[in-house]
Picture 1: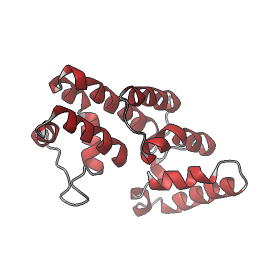
Picture 2: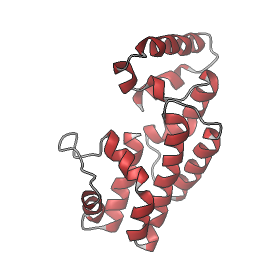
Picture 3: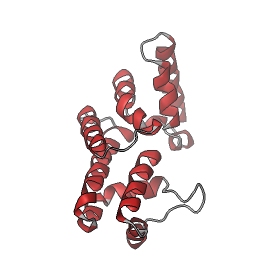
Length: 172
């Protein structure tokens, strides 16, 4: 999620000029980390996604499509990045892909993972990405996480899903 949101938000900031997107973020209680080059972290990325409609109201017309794209990525986040896989996750990914491609931005490796591997991963496992997140390993359900990762690795070894799907998700 971090790479996707930071990429789009940085483009908004560049397009708006004079650091206006970062100022908007500060006014809305969203602070960039002082390390890692000053990027948005997990909860701040989530806040940007949740506040994309507010951002859209302030953006000049030629940048509103960026807020719409953030909003569509929020739909992806809600449908398959949490603990529960929603039935419409594939449609959400398709809408996000369409919106992102309309921006004519470079497709980074993390964007590629969302476009080409998240759906495959969720369909093959029948699960959302939440149980596989870094935070999940800190929770009580780490045994379930380990069992699910063994299942994914076994499917990858037996060529039921591609090894690149496992590797790509680990980098998301």
